[in-house]
Length: 121
Image (cartoon, rainbow, N blue to C red; front, side, top):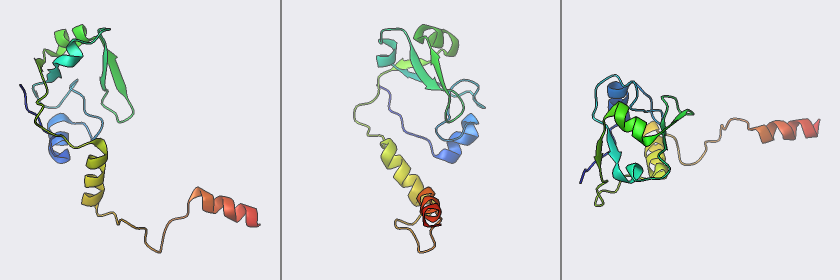
């Protein structure tokens, strides 16, 4: 069984060269071992998606080709480790950035504000 945890964003960028939500094991700055969950190996069809190096870019690849190219360790995710959900991770990042929970009195105009202005003229 393999136990993993997410790296801090700064550490991830320094090691991989990719920003948050854009990390891929293809073309990383450092030679980091890649772990592929055995559930992906067992999937049919022989295909999965992974990060493509940009936030909005994904790479689809045959699992067998990925294994031949990347030579990952194949293992099973530890069941006793609870990684934060995407929502929890986002909340943690927002708190780290110091974003207030409630908007301040000096809020920026939204698209609805512009529409209201046009309707009133």
